Length: 118
Length: 110
Image 1 (cartoon, rainbow over the protein chains, first blue to last red):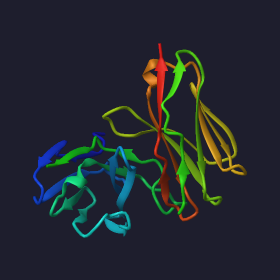
Image 2: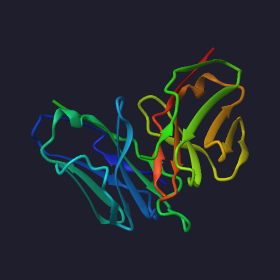
Image 3: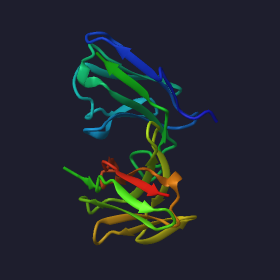
Image 4: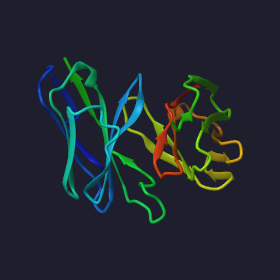
């Protein structure tokens, strides 16, 4: 299995531009998570999906952020307009889920997208 | 606000010694507990999970859970330089949400 695939791996953009991050989860996984990681705040959950449906987006910082999962094999996280404080590493993770739990158990992370907003 | 607390470190341990990483959590109803390792510039990867009180061993790694004290730890025996990384504790709380700690940076000195 190729694992979770994210693109691009690096993104440098200017303030005010739209940024789109992409993720392909592991085939057969029911859950998909978007995280942001910075030195100051650590790993933060932004939003997660179960069977392509957004379940909890309470971690999305503001309306500039949006996420979609049009099918089981693809998700996007969009920032419009981007700001310098959005600079971070964005991880996508997927999980096979569990019968007992509301969220996935073991999460498999993609390599991340390093975003720098100038 | 449910919390997972870890000492940020860095924790410095000589090669061959036992490294002990600790994590406390605030939600007494938490159900399952995970340790992830993250090398610098890489993504987190799962090392171990534990659900029941007591110890769980996997090779050089032992996870210890004490629900009464709301405490979970990770022991690494015979520490190697390749164990140098940040270790993230994650806890699935009573609402089935995964809460992450800030991580402990571990440095194994040759």
